[in-house]
Image (cartoon, rainbow, N blue to C red; front, side, top):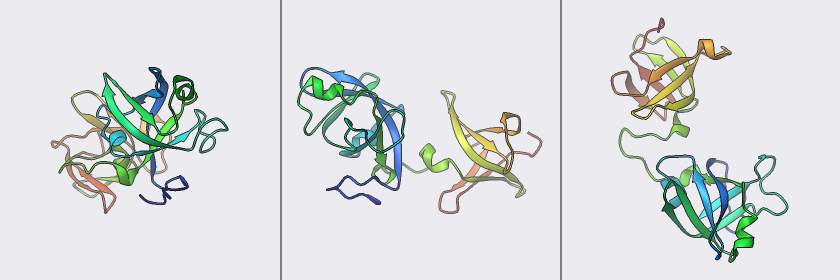
Length: 190
């Protein structure tokens, strides 16, 4: 894990927010987590979850630990339920309510070929087949059947300049993560 000291719980350089603790679950210290992905495998891939308070002002508040050492986690409907060392009753688990959950990007499961984590696509340059610069990926939208790249030209401000490019093989020719670039079949006038 990049920049993480397992003993001190030092904040990882590549921390990615993956969910939020919504409440306690049961009486033995378990808590419920709302994952931010439809497939919460990133939560299961790491036994060290880093926390920030709901406002995100600092790594851990007075009553909020900066690091949870997860003993067990499993899916429970659309949520994940988990328990951590040193949290053995409901009252202790309730102190975690609202905490934002982060894990190091290095802990994510390896994606399959032609699969990408959104966090890896944000910030990539987007160019078309003619080599025209279309801008950078500033976010993605989930439309159900597929994702859509939100591309904003460099130096542009506001939604009116934003391009929405479906992230499907018909329009995306190549994703070069090491080169930080996506090539698309998309005109400047779209």
